[in-house]
Length: 426
Image 1 (cartoon, rainbow, N blue to C red):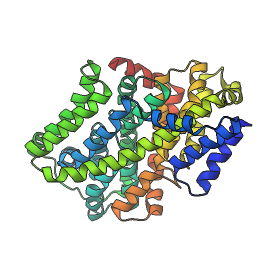
Image 2: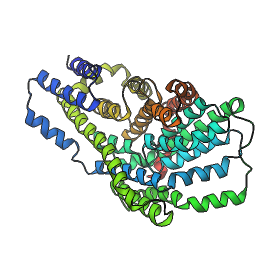
Image 3: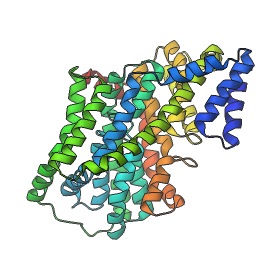
Image 4: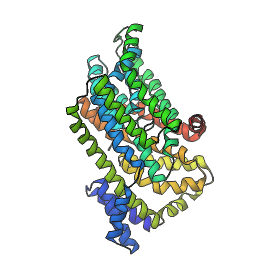
């Protein structure tokens, strides 16, 4: 009965048009009333405690690092490097988008920020070169969702806090799956480009041009090495890595590239603060619901429903991932993570599934949800920045969405694809 009250109240408040954060908070109130223990003081205390977490400090700093990276010219230099390396191939601008998405994912950790930066530069180029705009937009959207998988990942930070899983291990375990996501896009684009891409080459391959692009972009390439190396060797924690990313982006943009001016900082900090405040308030409201979900023993009820799958880890993972896919079509990335984590983690622990392995697949699945209509946040970003219709982007994204779902299925069937490389980095 309790699980019915939780689901019905949450869906009911969302159907009324209430923002997700307030719907979660209202859902918590309904659960408290249902349990006969409504107390505003306890509600307020849990709301405040929801964001009183040291690891969550990484969120605003990574948001600010992304803003500084875009304003300081780092994003454009990454795209220039990719274009010098693969721009001469048939469909070369598509390969440029994939390479740039991989590098930018290792710097910002935000799918929306990376997608917006890539779309702003590459969609006009691809449109002018004769590429199909829908297919190009779909590729850029699919490349943008690599950001929550490759460290530094804001999704891993939030999941790690909610699930009490090592954020450092999640970061390191996401490296190879993120690269494999890029390889899946590369193979899919190669298949699409044989028919769709214009035959005219954008440019000839020149070693001199590659060398110049690498020299100009070397500072952009050093940042992911600095962050991953620092966490691997215990120099700093993920939260401290976020601060390092901010300082590094600020120094490179202002002192080396000289494209970031001090007068821009207030606007950039305000933008990062607004985005961070939205995420943090959502986390606070979700953790109120998570606390009440635990009190109401909803995880135990879900465990009982999933008991037929408990003896087979692969079947259980398939069932949980199918649930996430369905929920991801209706909810945005962060709400899905915060709502389902406290429900599914007891199942994961009871079945003996590695929490780090589950976390990587869970976040990857939620990232894929950014591409699924009707919500599809990343699709909307690409459509807005690229000045094309959402229907056009949705049509173009299907081959790449299918490729990511196939890769997710392979990770479920063969867990070693995730965990064996992860142990190389531990």
